[in-house]
Length: 233
Image (cartoon, rainbow, N blue to C red; front, side):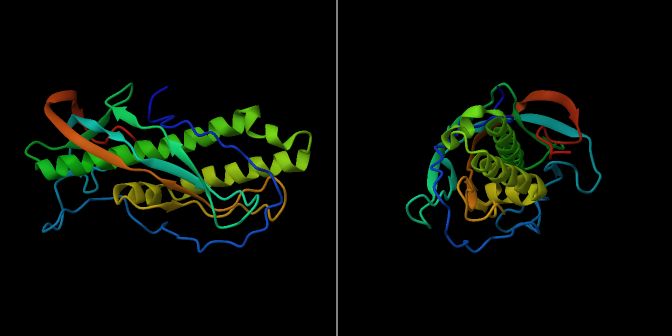
């Protein structure tokens, strides 16, 4: 599978006791923008697509980026024995280029800083898209609800919890991207299923994109008006 669709393999070991913890303060980043990035000392860094040309300029050139999604984690609070101690699941490091590339869509003469920033933005878009895809895989996998045994209500609440996480990323996609760009924790909010068996609590994504190089001499496509990893429809 390509890294944009499935960037990590989470092994949710669901301890499905009665969830009875309080909520954490929810960080709402929905107002954050994933538009033009800025570098120290600059108001804006070039007419690059992150993911699209905000000012309508273009077309540009799509260049190849190298780096990795690394040191990343998914947290969720299962509240089996104690609350406020979230489970931490490692996200597998993904090196790019791979099956799908990370690419900076920029006009000729764009600064090196702008190219790197646009690569990181495109990587962040791919990372958040991958999180959505992974939640879909968990929802389709019978092993996800297997710890519930024959308890239908428990299974339904596991599905409700994971569906909430997925929908939160979709609804706050720009905020997810900006959190990755800024190397910040992205809080997924708390599923509404209440303090019952199978209901997970507040989840968070910690995704880090590290850009190591940009190959401006390797043209993936002669013309572009948008980066490779676009927001969900």
